[in-house]
Every structure is written in structure tokens, then in C-alpha cells.
Length: 57
Length: 310
Image 1 (spheres, chains in turn yellow, green):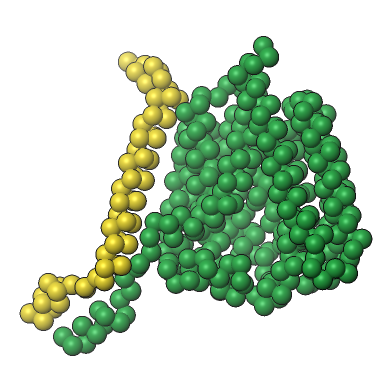
Image 2 (cartoon, rainbow over the protein chains, first blue to last red):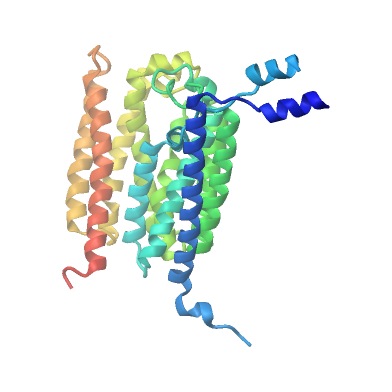
């Protein structure tokens, strides 16, 4: 059990190239997700406009 | 412990793929053509178009086309590794795994179709889904390796974007959209076979039955000429049908005649030139031909929408 814990603590040592690539991928995913949210938000406004607030009671 | 350590160091693969590798999976060069032709179809179609919605639609179409490219690279990784033109792609080069490409392609396919459907209309959304299916399944998985007609039928996938753009604005599939589809459909075989004639050995090595390898160079040249001759009048149809202007009509007529003439040269030389100059010239002009036709269509559509001559 303690052996397994040790391995988890140690993890996998990334090379510089691997660490840099992972960071770049993470940033790219973050930017794409943020852009997607903004696109859907702006697109919803553009498509529905004031109709967004017209609700049937 | 020692076993776990060695496992971690040898079996667990830690990716060194950068965002550019994933971007390359989207086949950016193909994507450019898709964006260009879809934009022309979208703006040439009748009906109001919100610029923001139009921008999102083009983005969704581009991402959908890219997703089908990633799915194509997932399935074709084995033959990509054999051909010089494709050996440096992210999967054969070992920077991205085939599974990563599959997941990437599937997620982008779903997101692009949903975005286009919700933001514009479901005719366009459905057509995008069908286009991705057609390219990834019908062309890549089925036709490419089984018939020399692969490019003819598979080329339809590349012909859908202007029709898609038309559907975004009009909300329907019309005859005009089908004519734009027909232009790229008829253009694909002479364009691609011109390339295949000087890359024959590559396709032979990869056991892909391209027309020059499967049916012979003579038959390929005959078919190329037939397509080019049929393409010339089809290229002018948008003018005759009234959804393109005089400038388009003139450019399409002249460019169609040049295209047919260059294809005739390929047919006449019939491989006598070992440097294959005629084939290379035709391939180069074929790209210019499509750029000219859709460029003028786009230009005219922008002028009409901006009301320059109103």
C-alpha cells in the first residue's frame, strides 16, 4: 500500500518538452472554451435580440 | 515498486503534441477552401443575414470540415505513413496518436453541427452533419480504398460547402445551391487526377486505387477531358440562372475555356513528356479556376449586399 502511495506522490517526471507542450495545450483548450462561450453568448443576442426578454406569462 | 517505476517510464506515453499539431489535424489548407466557397454561397443566397450569425456559421462550417479532416487522418494513418506527401502529418510522425485524433474529430463534429443548427437552421446543421459523415465514412472508410472512382464520389464532400453556405442564408436546399455543388463536383476529378498522374507511385505504394494506377493513364486522361468539357458550361450556369452577375459570367466563360484547353493539352501530350509539365500546369490552374469563380461570385454578392450600385 505504501509502495502505491509512493508512486503516486512521485508521479511521472515530465521532460521539459513534455511540460511545455502540456502547458501550451492547456492554454489552447482554455482559450478555445472561452471563445466558444463568448460566441454562443454573442450569437444568442444577435439571433434573438430583444425577443430574449419576451416571455409568455 | 521497481515494476511500477519501469512501467511509468516505458509504457505510459506522455504527449509532446502542441496545439499546432492538433490544428494540423484539421487540414487547414482544405479548411481555407471550404471557408471561401461556403462564404461565397452564404452571401450569394437571397435573404437577410446577420453578420455575427454569419461569422459563427462560417466558423462552425470550418470546424466541421476540420473535424472530418481529423477523422480522415485517424482512419488513414497507415497509408499516410507510406506516402511522401502525407508522411509528416501528426499521426504518422508520432506526435499525436490515432485515438487522440478520433476523439478530437468526434467532439468537434458534434459541437460544430449543434452550433450551426442552433445558430442558423437545421437544414444547414443537418447538411453539415451529412457532409462530415460523407467525407469520414463514405469516402475515407469505404470508397478511397475500394474503387478508382473514389475521388469522383468522394469529391462530393468537398462540393457541399457552398451549398451549405446557401442553406445557412436561405434555410433550404435549392437548385442554385446544387449548381454551386455541381461546379466543385465536376472540377474535382481533373484537378485531383492531374496531381495523381505525377504522384502515381505514391498511391501505388499505399495500395490506394487512384484512377491512373487502376484504369491506366489513357483512360484517366479521357475522363479528365470529359469532366473539363462538361465543367465549362456548368461554371457559367450561375450567370444564366441570374444569381451571379456579368463579371462572373465573363470570368467563368474564359476560365472554363482555359481549363478545358489545359486539360486538352494533358490529353494530347498523353504522358510523352517525362516532366509532366502539362499535368502540373493544369493542377496549378485548377486551383486558380476555383478561386476566380468563387472569388468573383463573392465579390458580386458583397457589392449587392452593400448596395454599392443602389
